[in-house]
Structure formats: structure tokens, C-alpha cells
Length: 222
Image 1 (cartoon, rainbow, N blue to C red):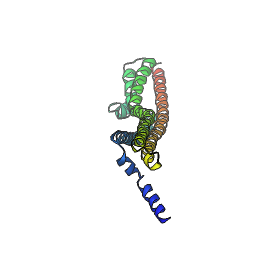
Image 2: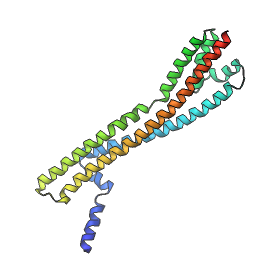
Image 3: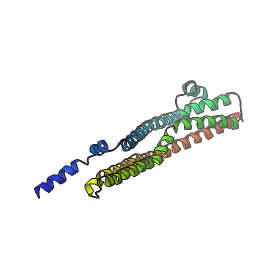
Image 4: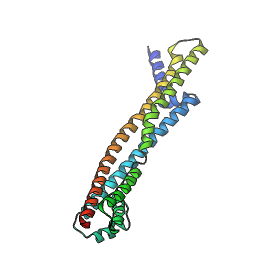
């Protein structure tokens, strides 16, 4: 009984993540490395975009507070339009150029809206990569799974033995590749949805500002 317990312990030790990776052939190792890279990349994008959106929300609150504080248009232009550093400032500067040219509110809205769209496109940078990782990672993992199972069958054919000890390494590699695929895909899906919702809320606020700026230009022109 003691011998069997030792054998089981040694078998379990032989199936650590490190052992599974080192024992895999070069194809499965490549799949695992790609999936690990995809997972790290998705986390890096998520952290970077979260910090970026936090900063944008903070700057937009400060901008709206100053814009509706009752200060003159020239004072606001000096503070925000001359050196715009965030989407609200860029949008304000674009609309102000039309406004200063005595253009009607419709043209102000068009210019500001176009700039707002450009700024939102910049803010969405990286979401496409998350979407790609979320959709591609399970299939990359599936390829590693199929290859690992093929290795298991080749081992059976080579050993002429269906013992679990012969089949287990290939199956373990296959399941490990599947797990890595899900480990990369699931967080990427969560990050994509959360960031898309966050950017959507920010975009709604920016669109609201464009409408308000156009309305102000219309009232000023009457």
C-alpha cells in the first residue's frame, strides 16, 4: 500500500503545469506560448484602457464644471481650445472654429460631432484586439487539444498498449491547451464588454455636449 501511495504522488507531481509544458511537443508548446501571450496582452490592454478611461472621465467632469460655470466664451477658449488635451476640449475647439466664423449652429454641430467621432475612435483603440483574442483563443486552444489527442493515439500505436500511463500525458497536454484557451478568452470577453460599456457612456456624454454646444451657437446667432 505504501508503494502505491508513493507511485500516485510521483504521478501527480509529474502532471504539474510546468511538467505538462516541458513534456509537450513543439506544436503544443507553441500553442501554449501563443495563448499565454494572448492572455497577458489582453490584461495589459484592459489595465491600460481602464486607466485611460478613468482619466478621461475625470477630465470631462472638470471640463463640464468649468464650461457651465458662467465664464465667458473667450476665457473658456483660452483655457481649453488653444491647447486641447482631451476629447471634450478637442470637440469644443472644433465647434468653436465654426462658431467664431459666424457659422450657424448646424455647422457647429457638424464640426464638433465629427471631432467627437474621431476622439471616440481613438478611445476605442485596443478593443478590436480584445475582440480578436476573445474569439480566436478558444480555437487556438482547440487546435492544441486536437494535437495532444493525436499524440495520445500515436503513443498507443507505438507502445501497442492502452494503459492509462501511456495515454494520460497526451490527454493532459490536450486538456491543458483547452484550459489555456479559455483562460485567455474569458477575461478578454469580460474586458471587451466592460470597456465597451464604459466608452459608450463616455460617448453619450460627449454627444450630449455636442448638442448643447450647437444649441448655444444657435441662441448666440439669433
